[in-house]
Length: 433
Image (cartoon, rainbow, N blue to C red):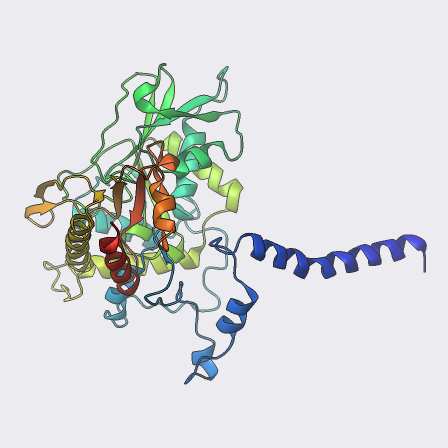
């Protein structure tokens, strides 16, 4: 055998042999990393559970495992498993069967700016916005993305002049969504760069990211910059009736939404943008065409089915109104959870929360309170400067305020976990002094 073949074979063999050792070392060093699964956890997850066999033992993952009173409660991510309880009760309303021959082509609608978007998804997005009244759709292009983050990146590309001497500055008012800086600078693009807090920005050319209701603090936001050369992208992921009153029909140039926070289907990985300008829409589509050659049609059809089921629940005029009303369910849950959290913070005496605000909700036709998807919690104890670290010591994982351009005495807490985890969190928080 030629010597070079021996070297190649030996190299491959050594790499394969080293993988388990490297994985073990990583697990030892990073035991709580959200992406790390220990060998014990693997064995537990793969082994059939008592009373299960066959198809039941091979059932799809339902996400995080159940928790006990001694578990680490991870509320760092906005994983919207709270909505599982609603969808379990809807029967076949959101079920979908896709034949093996369907969705095989790259193309969906070659006459559309977004040529890989399924027409049914476009229809159901427009229908839902007309039902809720939270965003204008007439005169807008609907663009589909693999989550709204992909569309956010596409918008930065579309709005940045290719012939500028310097990268376009990307800003947002602090506290801003923690992923904005990371996503903006991840590829180190020469077209745009993160420039921090919009309130301290000086200049005429910029892209301002406006998240409203804001992640992390739930505040209702408007753009703070007004230069004629500046552009704005409105992230309206949380502008739905379960979180905030629908006070107006938003009609901004670029608006981003996602099924993750509207219906709870984060794993479907579908977001959409409403874009006024055709050329901007075309440039945004170019990014996604190059990045992923489109967006999964299977996911689009699933999302269309889910959005249709939500609209059906409120379709009184069509005679199809259902007892399964997602926004009613979501609002009841959020009102109850915020009540529990405010009581727990008061019982502890060392935490504070933003004051509750309310407004007239055009969708519900009544005055409703803001009940954000995240709590912006502050630790007021004098000897605690790192609230996330303090809570971590009590088996509560949150996201530190410094990741949002704010004081580390603040943390962001997800309000969207399952009931069992949320109840343990509330009990644990109330006991802290």
